Amino acid sequence: MASFAAAARLHAYAMAGVSPVPPNAVPLSPTVTLVHLLTPTTVAFAWRGGAGGANYSILASSGGGNGPFDTTLCKLCATDNTTPLTVTLPAAGAWWLLVVPYNVDGVAGPPSPVVQVSSGGTGQRVGVLRASAAVAGDNRQ
Image (cartoon, one colour):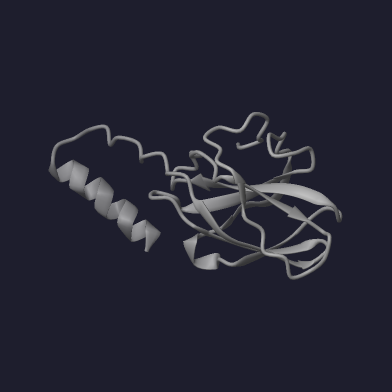
């Protein structure tokens, strides 16, 4: 489907006489809808994708809600159709997570709000910690 959409986009611009074809829009920030601790190091994680998001990465920080988000739990491994996704934390304890959207060209958009999980017990649903437009120290590539 994605290759058909890309071909249709190229054809539409060619028919309109637009050259070169402009880049795809940067995706909007996703919204985290579920963070559920299954075990002390396993989390069920779901989000609603931002417009223009084709793939998503999940980044984590053990240093707090302001980052650095230097632990990649999932790199471009998810789409809007793969949630909830089960991710494994590097160790038990407190972790802060966010989702980074990427468009079909691999350009990253703004991350989701940060959510916190703590391995104080299983079965915990966790809410949004804070909104984040641009988080310092994240490792989006």
